[in-house]
Length: 145
Image (tube, rainbow, N blue to C red):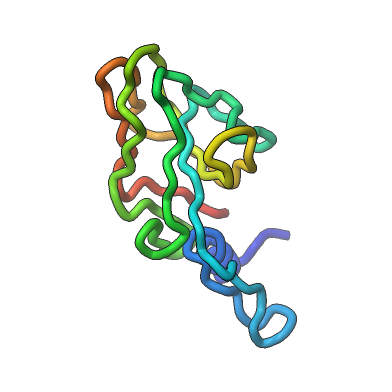
C-alpha cells in the first residue's frame, strides 16, 4: 500500500509548514507544533541514503554549518506532493577546505547526528571551498511519493 496524493500533500504541509492534518483521530487531527521552529538544511558530498542521519556524507569545508529554514510558508512552499524552498539558502562562505555538494538534506538538528527527514540530489552540484558561498536555489524541490 502507498500513501494517497492527499496524504502526501498533507504530510509535507505538516512537516514543512506546521499545518495540522485534520480529521485523523478527532476533528483536530494530527496537530502541528505549538511553536513552528525551524528545520536545518545540510549539504552532502554523496547520497546519505534512507538510513543515514544528518552527518552521513556531510560536507566539511572550513566554516560550513547547517542553515535554519523556518517551518512556515516563509521557509517552504508545498504544492501537491512537492515542497520547495521559498528563497535562496546560503551556507556560510568557505574559509578553507574543499568539497563538492551533490545532495542536500532537511533535518532536525543544527549540529550532530540529527534526524534526516528528506534528502535529494541537487543540480548543478556546488563546488565548495575558500571564498565560495554555497547557495541552494529557491524552488529546489523535494517530493513525497
